[in-house]
Image (tube, rainbow, N blue to C red):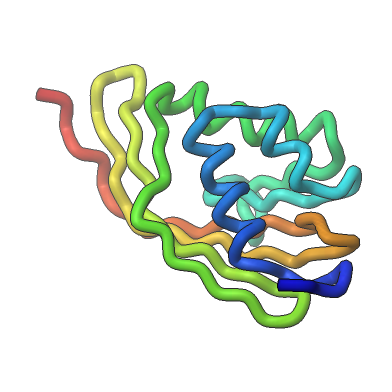
Length: 132
């Protein structure tokens, strides 16, 4: 399957998701542009908290594993159109207090030069599951 440099592909989004599940920061960084913007699921601004550029993205991506060391993204469903792509999955993870998060989420991507230029994350606002 050939694509133009700005075309989103399901294959790229699946490989990016696998890097998240592998907790592989270097692999994640290989999928993004140097000026990539990551809009996290929460934060003070209308887009949540924004991380921009290599150093900030490293920090923002790593925060997911710091908050939930066993974080996982499963049951992925993907589609792509032009330079945009969407990944829907189930996020699950255990916080340091033993409570768990499990909720459906969506990433909306914008691609440029064959890489992810924007990752805008959305997650259902579901209460945590109490520790047993």
